[in-house]
Structure formats: structure tokens, C-alpha cells
Length: 264
Image (cartoon, helix red, strand yellow):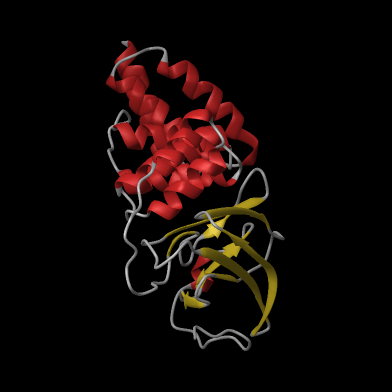
């Protein structure tokens, strides 16, 4: 069988299977690297599918590569919004190049809202010499008059999150705010109709990797955008998801708001 046919058969089998899991994330990544060496469109598409499997298993280098393929269109899909999401997941684990690339997307407004403050924060978080130099060269951007809430990207509503690392990557996007903003991430577990906060943390970037307990049948998260200089804030609505191998269908529908949760 010709190389192209072999690679396309591999791609078909990968697409038909589920997301990458803990035990095969590194193996999928290693195979993707080798597959790229074949060259050509078929190899790129097969490598991209493998990188996605490894990325969904929580491997930061695979998440970065998935972003690269989506950014460039090398895997057959050109989607800057998805690229930004995968860069943000990798950057949440401290991946310097992912943070640099994400900063560039925010600076230009490609795939995400143009946000000079977030671009500068991601350049600083990257700490690469080129990123730090770019942060210094950034020009003043006039701020909008009003504060807006963040758009929550991942985990999505009804999603069941399973990762090799045990970490859940929270990703959001934000418009330019009236001043440099901080983002307060809140995560609650819903048990017997009541909410218990299991994580709360503040950052000036747009993603966090958080170690959450597995097996929680229902979880909720939101972002509160805060401008410290003025004390103003905007609250996003709660997003419900699950942890571990719990079925996601239980999260669908219009169930009553659990006790202790408010969208304000």
C-alpha cells in the first residue's frame, strides 16, 4: 500500500476513536512526530489527529503543536480561535512558546478579541527574550469605557473532563477592559443540590490548570473580571461540567440552580 493510503487509513481510524487518554498521550505524541517526517498533506493530517489525541490527554507539548497546526492550517483545518484555545491550555502548564504565540494573537486580535493588556501579560508569562522585548515595544491602547465579562471557552457546558495529568485546564477570552484586569476563577462541586467551592484563584492571564478531584458528577465554574484600579467587576454565568468518567448527559437540561450558586 502506498504511503499516502497508509496515512489516510491511520487518520480514519483515529477520527473514529474517542479522545486521547492518560495511558496513550505520550505514545500518540511520539507517533505524531515520526508521522510528520513522511512529509506531504496526508502525513500532516495524520500527525494533527495524533497531536489532538495527545493534547486531549493533557500533554502540554501536544497542546502547543495542536495550536501550531490550527494556526498554520497544516493539518487541514485553519482555525485561529481553536489555535488560541490550545495555546492557552499549553500555556496554563507553563509552556513558554505557547504563551508567546497566544500573546501575539491577543496583540493582533486574531482568533481572540484584541486585548493589549492580555497580550502583555502573556508575553511576560512566556519570559522568552523575544516575548519580553515585544512586551516592551507595545504601544498604548485606548481602553473602552465599560467593563465586560469574560467568555468561557473550556471546559464547555456538559463536558466530561478526563486528563492524563489530572489537571483541568480552564480557558476564557476577554475583550480589552477599562484598565489592566485580573480574573478570579471559581470552581464549585455540586453535591446533593448544594454547591461547595473547591477552588478559587486569581490570575492576569486567560487560562489556569487546576488539580481537581476526580469522579465529581457535577462541577461548575465561572470567571469574575476585576479592574483593581477602579474596583469594578463583571461576572460570567456558571458553566456546568463533570470530572472523571461520569456521564456528561446529566449536566444537560434546565435544572434548578443549586443552593449556594448565583449568577449575580
